[in-house]
Length: 309
Image (cartoon, rainbow, N blue to C red; front, side):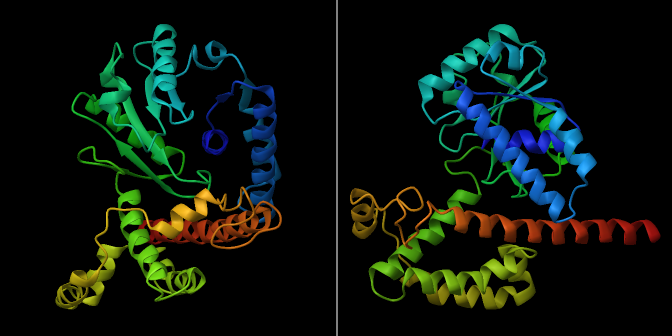
């Protein structure tokens, strides 16, 4: 995730330093960033000159002190191991200025746990990006009762500045917004597979041709307004009582994991792959770029129309 976020900042004109523990990880990050920029140039979302300028704004190091000593905004995107995060934060706070914002890309730990050793918990915040972060517009900004509201505002403005669509949660909750809604949908999709109602492929086809198509420009709540809330009330009342409310992982999913059917990592999941998912990832990102280009075009069109008025 870190390399995609770094790309975003550089593309927006910010100087950014990527720190990783291993040189090989940095080399891979540089390769991924360069390739991502090249695809954007091919799709005429950037010029060659803009790409070259953005690449000059990114530096790479294995030295954490070198990466953060004069940083205004620090994004931690290390593995979801709490002790490792706490040790990292202790070092960060020992060398950066009191004004530096410390952010985590976590989707696992609440800020109360992340700041348990912090000298200045008020300057900690969560900015939860979605993979691939250089393409998916949303960023969930999560605060807690000790977070300084000026930090929230500054972070929100920064996310807007680098071209994201940030949302600020009114209060912290496990899974935030997107993953809670996603897990609720996944629970029902897995239930449909488990009970023999539909295959994984049929569910994907159905969702891509309905919710996936509609929600790109019209979210679930706006969709209900457009349909009419009396229709929503009737639909929810008729269907909700029959939805799965299990709190257990489906046995077939557990068996897949036990049998090392982990998805693209092992070339077998709900689908079969023969290239560690490289073709699937390329196809996904290509479609994401087309959609992002369309969305940006619509936004610019709206700004022009507003200016004309």
